[in-house]
Structures are given as C-alpha cells and as structure tokens.
Amino acid sequence: MRIAVVGPVAQSIPPARSGSVETVTALLTDGLVAGGHDVTLFATGSSTTSAKLHTTFASGYHEDTSLWPWELCELLNLTAAVERADDFDIIHYQAEYAPISLAFTRLSPTPVVVTLHHAPTPPEVALWSRYSEAPFVAISETQEKLLTGLNVVGTIHHAVDTATFVPRPQPDDYLVFLGRFTEGKGVLQAVEVARRTGLRLVLAAATNEYYRDVVEPMVDGTDVVYAGEVDVAEKVTLLGGARALLYPVQSSEPFGLVLPEAMACGTPVAALRRGAAAEIVDEGVTGGLFDSLDALVDGLRQVLALDRGTVRSRAVERFGPDRMVDSHVQAYMRVTAERRDPEHLSTVQAGLGSKP
Image (cartoon, rainbow, N blue to C red):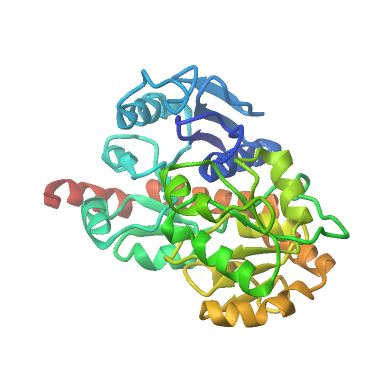
C-alpha cells in the first residue's frame, strides 16, 4: 500500500527522550516499510526514518518556540499530506492532542484514519460525532468504549521495540516510577508504596512545576532518588535494573507504554486496576493488578517473585512490533475497501446534507 503517516511536529520522530506518540509512530512507520509498503512520514526535518520523509518544519515547536501556535503547526503538517492525497491509498494521522483530521473527512479523496492518544471526554466525542463516518483506530478497549457512536475500525495495542528493550537476568535492588509528574500518574502513591515496603525508589521524568512543588521535597537522594529525564538507552538500563515498575495511576489511562517497555526488559509491573492496565498486564504472569494502594503494598512481594524470563517472553508475544504493524494494515485495507463501496459513498453524501 501507499501510506502517509502524519506524526506530531512537537519534536523529532523518534524522540530524543520522552514522547510516547512519537515513539509509537516511529515503530509503526519503520515496520510498515519493512513489510514492503511505500510509506511517507510527515514529520520534522530532525526525524530519522526508513520511510520517505516529508518535512514541513526543520525542527519541532517544543524546540523552536517561534513556531506558535502549536495547533497551526500540526494543521499545516497534516494539510501537507492531504494536499498529496492522490499519492496515497491511506493517510494515517497520529493526533497529538485532538483529531483535527476530522475536518478533511469529506474533502480528501483518500481516507484519513486517526489514532487518538488520550482518553476523550464525552463533550469531545459529541463534537467529533459530527463526522461519525471518520475512521478511528483505538489504542485499547478502554479507549474504544469512550468512542461510542464513532467509527472505530480497529482496536490495536501499542508495541515496543523488543530488540531494544532487552532483559537483565539479575536486577538491582530498587523500584522504578517512570512517567510524567502529574497527580493522575500517581507518583506520590509510588513514593508511599516504596516507603511502606522499605524499598528504594527511582523516579524518572522531565521536571515540571508539579515536580518542583510537590515531588521534589520527598526526594532525599537515598531512599527516593531522582534520575532525571532519560533517553532510550538510559530507560532500558533503568527499567531492566528495577525489581518492579510501580504504576499506581489515579486516573483512567487509555494505554501506558511504559508497562510493556518494562515487561520487555523482564521487569514485572505492580499497577492499580485502572484504565487499560488490566488489558496490558497478565495478572500473576507479567505483574499484579490491585484495587487499592493497601492491596498493592501487601501484594508487592508476590510481584517481585515473578519469573523475569516469563515476563519477557509474554511481552514479546503480546507487544512485538509485527503484531501492531499487521493489525494496522488490516485496518487500512478495511477502510479503503469501504471507501470503494458505493453504499459508503452514499452515506458520506447524505452526511454532507445532514451534518450541522
């Protein structure tokens, strides 16, 4: 297939440090190329890819603050792909924040598929339903349930590069929390778990106001250590050396890429049973799922005892790149087949007359 993958232009693809959307976009793009597809990636000029690269901006708006507002940068990058729509069989938009590709649903001669990377609110979904025929790819069953009334053409879990995230037979003696410093990520709860179990905790993420105001006072450099924002190599070392990844999220999340990344390193996960965690963690095999923080504290020793080789093998089986790539190709083929169907054309034409 001739495929346009439109990535975010906040930073390079893949990112130098953190950035799950950019990480997954890079893995999908290179996997599609390896599968023999003709792929063009629309991204910053600082990106590295095996696909053809179409550059709208030399660098991202997180790096060049003169590129503002960010919404216009994302729109111009997407528009560049739509302007070349006849060159492609499918355009796949990786939404940084919102599915702005919906505006092109009835304008582009080539179908535009969109992947969301957040948990949408009911008002957002109600607005998006003005283009109810627009094809969405959900990243989890948890997210799919939030997209009620929209055209979900596939539910595809993210993958991790299992050739990069490799296991360590013997971990060091610490727990790890890796994620943005926000209340919803549960960093304070991770600190509480570590203190109550008497285990050392390493925190890794970019600093922000929440870290400086709330988290930093708890970092003593001995029992709670801050490792900074890590790049890929540092992340592999940090995850592989941990006895377990703590994931005590306080709000429902549609995925959580750090979970399969840790498991690919052979590191089990101790998570609260919220959002998509139950879809990712195989309880008693790759980690533990708990209904409360007290239960997580009580059950952590069982998580630490899980066989790291089994954790790794199950992660490779479930979250290897080939599975994600093949599932996307199947979704693309469904969308293009529907677009060729005269009944689909009638639906779109009817929508043009009925949508406000």
